[in-house]
Length: 321
Image (cartoon, helix red, strand yellow):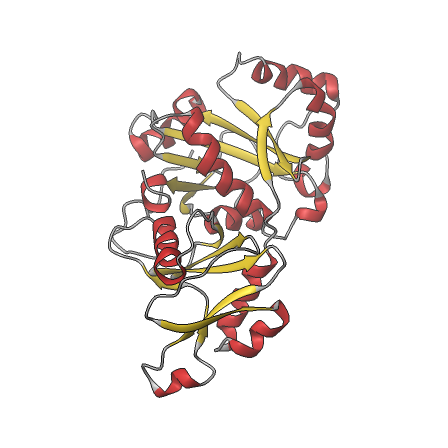
């Protein structure tokens, strides 16, 4: 593995500077709030906005989103999903029920649940409306994870052999028998790697696997660089097996919810999560970055033909301890 050329972990910069949460009801209507007239322009096309606000020093990104939701709308118990956490301003999407009660603070004088087709007419400037459209397009159907079983091996082989997966995945099993040889020990708990099936609306659509970084000999140098011995670091790998979900922001949501919900339960004390997609697999690299990972450095693995990007998720920075 090549030595790291640069580090972004521990940067003193506070990007993202704030967060926006585009909230929609389960009937598709989008929540917009009207600013009070502090400035003349607020009477015109700049007045309508989604819940948003600046990030306090050292505040986890998710905490900013939840705080702004609570302060500006009174909404609690909401689970925002990242659309893009990689830029100067974080963007989340969230869904609430039709009976959600909105309580405005003194920054706004009214709100409206707006049909998606009308958002562009109210939100200015156009690039902000474009960000809202991106958030509206993210699917928020029920997502869950369960441990891989032998009954899942035919699906797993099929997912790995799809065109958008196999070009990036090393050592793909040729058939179910080969998958049993590779994944059987993981199913039985005889391997440090755990594999989980991704369920969308109850239907299996892909898988994620996780391994304590310290258990991976080929990652020892990386482990020392991230956390000295890798004891509080976990590596993940993932595959969206359903082609219709590719390019829809689903990969970002899959990574986020796995890191948020599964990893800390399975690996108590976890502080860092790493992934290493191929640098030329720009969709996978961006899915990590949009989920809150930061690209630390690129390296050449001991095996394989692709150069890889080490992406690091700092739990304290993104989600909080």
